Length: 438
Ligand SMILES: Cc1cc2nc3c(=O)[nH]c(=O)nc-3n(C[C@H](O)[C@H](O)[C@H](O)COP(=O)(O)O)c2cc1C
Image (cartoon, rainbow, N blue to C red; front, side, top):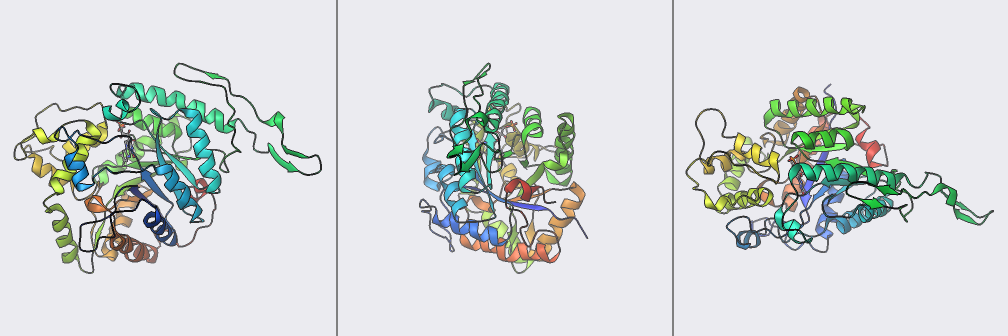
């Protein structure tokens, strides 16, 4: 039997489906919609739900925010940390991962927040470590532009040193709750960290009780060589977008090799590849669904607005029916830009419109379209060729709704379970242990 693999879900705390025939509303701000979603994912035994984040309203596409607000693409978007906390409180086994940026959160505040949510989650919290990519985010924090790509990773390296020291500042048995001696916590087991480095000066210790997992699970998404090294050194799970089976295998083998270089066991890092399955009772209907998503009048605009936002490149300037100008680079999300442009490599240069169509309906590593049984079998084959470790589902067409969620949790996942490919029961209570179960 093929090896089992892990499942995660990738989402934003932004509008759910609001203008389609089966729309679920568009006003998820109380968090209830996403709590119900997390409960459905828990029923399907997902490892974790991951909440993405950025810290600005973009105007990268066309020089104003019209397109973003009109389509509710990347905005409005709410803070993932409180959502993670209420999801944690409404579930018992599902991991909950929130994105927070090393460029903008002071490390003490971040470590305190993460320890707090890990406490609420009783050991199921993860932090998606990002360095942020947008000049406009920097402008909300007193800077004129985002620091250079590699400098962001230099800062992030020291940042990890600081938060790791903070998480370790309380010895695991520092809290005694000892009635006999009248001692709640043992002061001899709580230590200042006195960190002084190039970018940070932090005395410590945290004033929170220790995180149930010692430290939260670390999730990371960088795909550039610096990003891969960072992930290989620190991450418990990596979220990856790669081109096809070959790209996926290459990515996973590369980070596993890098992890060995850092003295880590590569099996402690679970690489989850983003896919956006499109499902229906029969394959032809699934294909028709895919076409409907791709041919939606606003699809191209939403895709290009998203790419513009994470790369600070104004894609509205380019002719849709001509190839992109050569030599486009970004100080933002490098891998995302490269992946988008790579679709055009080999043979004739594709037009921008064609690149959008070829990039597909989600931020997919590989196309998955068909019946639940077909897609489940394909996911099994792909994992076998790649070597592991699982997939991160993200809704196609930018927004998630109840119907799509149900297609995954009540169609695809049971099909995967019938093939013995994903778990049918949780055996662990902490997220890190759930990830390391197989
Ligand atoms: C699937 C995926 C999800 C990401 N989610 C976020 C996010 O929520 N917030 C963010 O600031 N960056 C996000 N990123 C960006 C990465 O964390 C990273 O900063 C970016 O890929 C640039 O690093 P690189 O140049 O090493 O690839 C994401 C990247 C990928 C591939």
